[in-house]
Image (cartoon, rainbow, N blue to C red; front, side, top):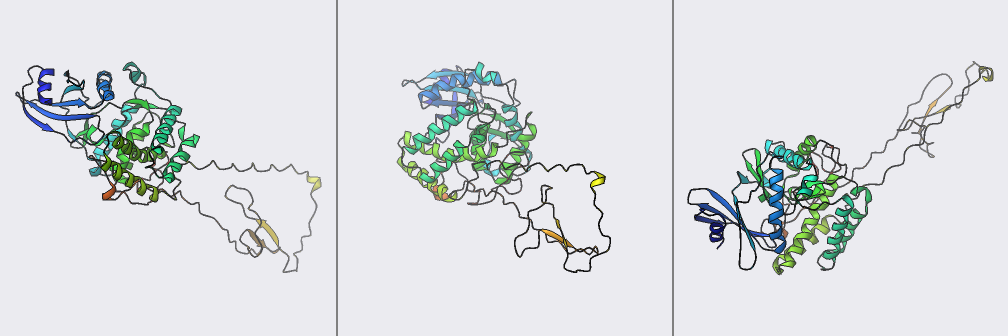
Length: 427
């Protein structure tokens, strides 16, 4: 049927071969690949919802504006047809390249760096381009409000553990997490949207969720699917390619967006009445709740107190200097306590009873006792990754997954200046 509609939408296409693409539950489109009589290949996309049909026009307008601004190929509508039930069928020349597998991305590989650079180019665009295409624009507070609304709707289903709801609410109430400039985003950036040839990204497809929004949105599925060190390579390349340094809490919001994707999959499954998928999503969320029960890495730590300024000593009048007996004391017990400077340059606090590590003892003959200085190591925030077992995972057919990640591993920063994973071991 779609091949026939494609032939009607693009006169002369004359399809001779049709290859269907899998459709996951809740997907906005059904797609098939069609080969014409002249050997040219086409992608035919039929909208499954009213919103998806409306997005065909806006995403097509956006692609026309982005084409001269990005160094990758973008979808270009060659013809449109309408079905009897008012679904929109759009026909596109097939984009160059093959869909990427986030799971197969390698750390420090040219492909991972290419992906980071392409995302940076998109986020560096002038937001006015999206406004010209008629796409929505959100500031940081609007992004936060939309996420809170999604959270309320998910909570009403009774399928989201209360521990997760509390975790996400704390993150959304941390105002410092939501101070960032919004940018032009793709919106989802799934594996099927990123096409590659060898070690280069050649095309970006699937722009139906594009908006000026949180840059973290374009990394959520990558975070779930890619190995930690490969993810780090993408983010490092992204940060290096951006004209302005990414905000310091970007990776905290990436982790939050990745967790919320599981919630979104649950809502999509409920919307289409897929009870089997609802059950699988529910199990995945319960598992995530167990993994993150003791983790507070989504919430930025409170700012530390600044040390008090050092006291300025007053000038001493030479006439006030009192002479001291130059003869050394014969009392071996007489000592002078010299405070040891603390990490901030100020004298350390006096030691407690039985602890001589805070001072230096010296007698008047110049003999100096040893110093035992104590330092307390700062503990790093524990970061728990978003990980799921095979039974609780729904991938392209179900829920976004993260089999490559350990259930509980440590996180830091990528060297990009943002909070989050370390290049060597971040989750």
